[in-house]
Length: 209
Image 1 (spheres, rainbow, N blue to C red):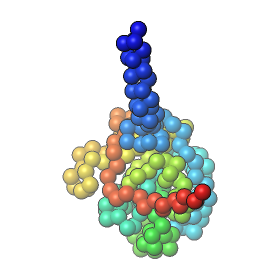
Image 2 (image 1 turned 180 degrees about the vertical axis):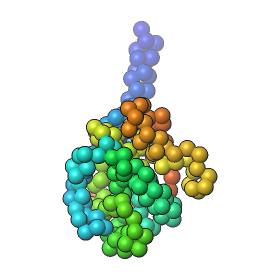
Image 3 (image 1 turned 120 degrees about the vertical axis):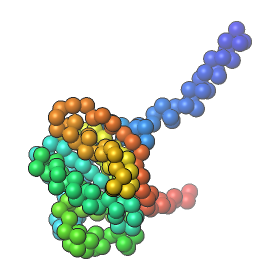
């Protein structure tokens, strides 16, 4: 009896210690899982001088949300690929939305606006000073991509492709996810780890008791 009691206690302790891992959302995301309803965003200012909301894209067959910035060399290197993605899939009913949440001067809306005007990018480039949208999505890196299907559920999250250098890319994860969604097929690879610089989350001050 004593042995069985000890064994039960050990199992209970093991499950209790493992509980946070069991509750983890995705493979690489601690907030969202594939198939979750995508968190909505609203009234985020964009480089075009307008406010943007997810609800504005109700007619889109899919939406690509990418967390990016100007202070990360990797993120900047991906800008042309993001622009090409938007131009390739816009005729098929897909919108690509970029958003920056970093609060350093080189990543604020004024700098983003200047960058977009200089490069002539067509994708909406938004800014969220509160950083709420990134926290809602559990985003860690720039760039980090989320593909939302027609029901605005998370269909893919992670890196855009398998190589940072454009000329070395062999697998285009985001494009594959979009092609699958648009053809009514399962997404072949729904989650991979993103690559790039870490999002510069502001430290939250704890109130003294």
